[in-house]
Image (tube, rainbow, N blue to C red):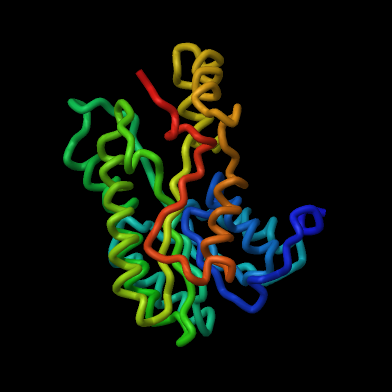
Length: 265
């Protein structure tokens, strides 16, 4: 039903897509979207139970193959091992989606060196190292890398310094990787979501003094009248990774319901 409704054409049939942070939220939606369009998936997450459940649910859909691997992307050795596992599992990689990320809702004075370093390690260093490790597995005809950024890369929000720095760095990485990999015909782009209703968002919302008021406030920030859904981001990823974006590289697509175009006093 979903394929018929969206007019999906199976444009990823025969392609292998690696998606990190795939067990829930945006990552799971990306996996579902690419799988629905025919991709053979290799899902990656540090949550073994979660990524196994996601893989099982997609396999039940009965379309393309789904494999998964467990890895802590904060560890360079784990990324090297993951790349070797992927090389043994599939003959090529056509799409890499660097979605895995963490954030901490801490004030400027609460952020420690350890907190800062881990956010940078997962959100920025891991996409670089994984792209570097998997680039050789892309076919001669190239492919696509899509990084999941954030509007935090260009707009300041309270209690988000490590996360914002990591996402701003990811935009620079996207541009520079696009240049470095252009000769290999590997396109590199990013999607920058705004407020998206994910399990991570729900958990943060529950910690607010008045969750209902905060939900209403964040909804009102968006000119389109709602917060985003993981499927909104997944559709943008599919576009950037697909044939319709064959001449698009080194840029980012903001998916935020118009939040960042508003004029704020």
